[in-house]
Image: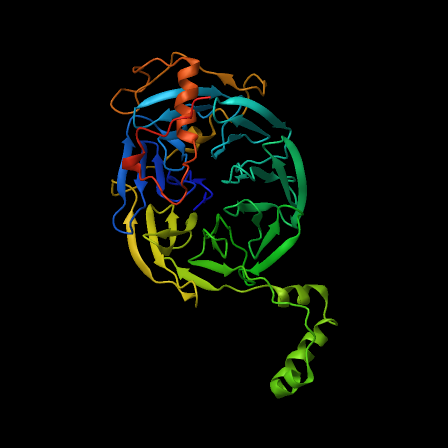
Length: 450
């Protein structure tokens, strides 16, 4: 399973939540620290690690490795790459403006600022390319394919309409621009193999799926027609046959990605007669549709939800995941109300999804409140130099748990040691069918000698 849910930061209650790429864990962070929770069962999520020493606003885990990419509220321009099991910081980079999002896979790490994107080689954290002067992107909207072979980056190509720019992070060139929506983009997500991308606009009524190779629209789904909503999460199932969408409403929609059956065979008269009046009426509707205005024709051609889930609360920002837990497909919804909701889903029949588990993500009764001034500090100004500054990569190794903020301890990293630590974490297991659990992961897989 390769999945990376769109992460979020809510300044209303200061909760940041993100699924890792294979959806085996969930990262939860607040101004008091962060927690990594295992999702190997639907029972109470097991805590993998915890830190209460930093005010973390972004934390992203690389698959099931011990590698974390983190940004704190007190230093919103600094990215830290850490090894949480050893409790050490491998390296850090500083940027000219606030880091709005961090995306990573086994080949690349992408840092998104409001008007630029930095593409790092994750094995040594060298900056390979900088995409400068992008349209204003205050929400840090971007998507990175979790597949290292189809290693594409998507980001808004306009701040006024829904253009999607696709960038090849391996060959370091622009692949294409997709005119996805009339309104600005609100959400994007690559399919697990990186061959498709799902998009939604700020209007929130239509979700579209495009082929990445040619930019051709493959599917179009209508979430609703009565009201515009804020779509905050899109998620493909592991086999890319289903697509889930979450918004600030109480309903989570799941759509089925079915290709139209058209084998090119002519329709015989016996088939027509067998359909009777219903067949005649169906053909009449199809024929009359050609005379309808384009808007009505578009609505008729849009797919409807295959399944849906109802959240206990609405008005919150949510992200979702479609993943197999103990070989059973589940719909997971992590909400800014501080809960993780687990739903059953019938992959064959669809329909209503039943809520089977509900887990509180925070230990304390009330979520912490993060002042806007903390999140916005440092978002403007700086030297204006768009080149990230490397921290004391060879000497700075801070213990993540147990030390007061600002103290440093641990083993000093040379450049070669830093590269070995990251390379071990990003190495892809030779047998994909055997999934390493977090307890079995350490020590990590090492690179083969040349």
